[in-house]
Image (cartoon, rainbow, N blue to C red; front, side, top):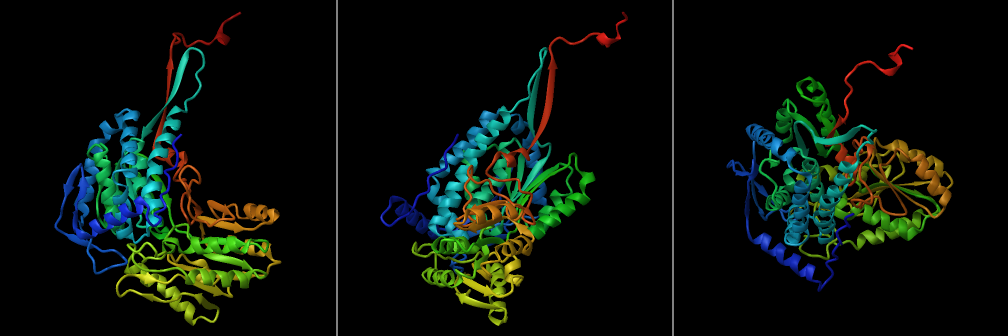
Length: 534
C-alpha cells in the first residue's frame, strides 16, 4: 500500500521555499519552444502560439507548436503502432515506468513541476504543491497499487479445471482531453489509461501546455516507450472530428465543461456503428458546489470552509464552493467574519508567496466571471458584500467576491461561474428541511457539497436527503481537497459519469476482461450419466 506524498509547506526560511523561488526565477529567464510528441518524436509545425502567465500577460514563457487534423491522424497511427508491444509488456515492467516517473516528480523535478504550474496556470506555491507534485505523484503510485489488486482478482476453479480472468486493455486508442485547472488531472487522464496497457492520444488545454510538456518529458525519461502517449496541441472540434470518426476509437477520458462532454457523447452515439467496439466514455464535468450551514454550526468552521472552499485557486476548482445556504440565526456573524477574512486576502503574482489570490486563467474566463459580478451590482435581488473589483490591465485579476441574494434561484446560485465568486442565501433557521430541498433542486450538477453542523441529527438528515446531490460529500469541512486513495473523486447528474479518479473504479473503465477456462481432463463423449439405460 503506497502512502500519500507529504505536502511541503514553503514556510519562510524553508529549503523548499528557497528551491522553488530559485526555479521560478530560472524559468522566467528563458523562453522555451514546446513541440508536440508523436511516436516519440518532437514535432514542430512553425505555427507558434505564445504562452503567458495569467498574472503577468506582458511576459512570454515560450511558445508551443499548434497542430492540425493531420497531426491527430499521425498521433492515432503512432498509438496503434505501439499497441501490440505495449499491451503485451509484462505488467511489472509497465508499473516500474510510472513508479519511476512518480519518484522523479517527487525529487529531481518537483520544483519544475510546481514552477511550471505556478507560472502557466497562476497557482500559488501551496496550491501547486498539492496539485502538480503531491496529487499527481499519488495518482501514479496508487494507480499502480489499485491495478495490481485488480489483476489479482481471479475467479474460483472447480476440480479438473482452471479459470482465470485476463484484464485486457481496450482494442483501440484512448483519447485523453485534459483541463487547465489541475496539472494532476492532466497527468492522470492519459497515464491511468496507459497503465492498463492502452495507447493514448493526449490533448491538454492550451493554457496548461507549459506544465503538460514537463509531464511528458518526465514520462519519457522514466522509460515510456514511443507512441504509448502522444501529446498534441489541436483545437477541440478538430480532434473530435478525427478521433470520433476513427474505427479504432476505444474511449475518451475527459475533464472539462458539461456542454462539451454532452456534444462528445452525442457525436460518439451517432458514430457508434463505425467502431470496432463500444467506446468507454468517462467524464468529469461541471459543478455548482454547495455549503449548507445548519443553525448548530460552529461559526468559525463555517467561515473557514467558505473562505478556503470558494477562493483557493481563485475558485477555479471543479469542487469550489460556489453557493452557500446560511441560517438566519448565524447569518450576521458569518457574513461579518467572512467579509473580514476576504479583506485580508492579498492578490497578485505567484512569485510573491504572501499572495493568497492570483489571476484567473485567461481573458475569456475573466470576461465570463465578471459578467456575474456586473449583473449583481445592478440587480435588486443581489448585493455585493465584499470584493467586486476586477482589472485585466496587467493580468486577469478578480477580487474574491461574495454576493448575497434574496432569491434562492438567482442566476449566480444556479449557474457554474468557475471563478472567485461565492453567492450566499439566508434561509429561516427553522426551515432546514426546506433548505435541504433547495440545495437538491437548484442546480443540475452534483459534484461536491458540504454540511456544517454540530447537531448530529442534522448531519444525518442532510447526508441522507442529499444522497444524489454530490458525489463527494463533506461533513464540517470545505467541499474541496479530495486526496487520492482517501476520497475518490467524481460526481453524477450534470457533473459526469462518477467513475471516481483516485480509486480502482476508474481503472476498470480502461480494461476489458476475458474469461479463460482450461479443462484438464476433457470429456470425450457427449452423453451425460442421466442418459444411461437402467
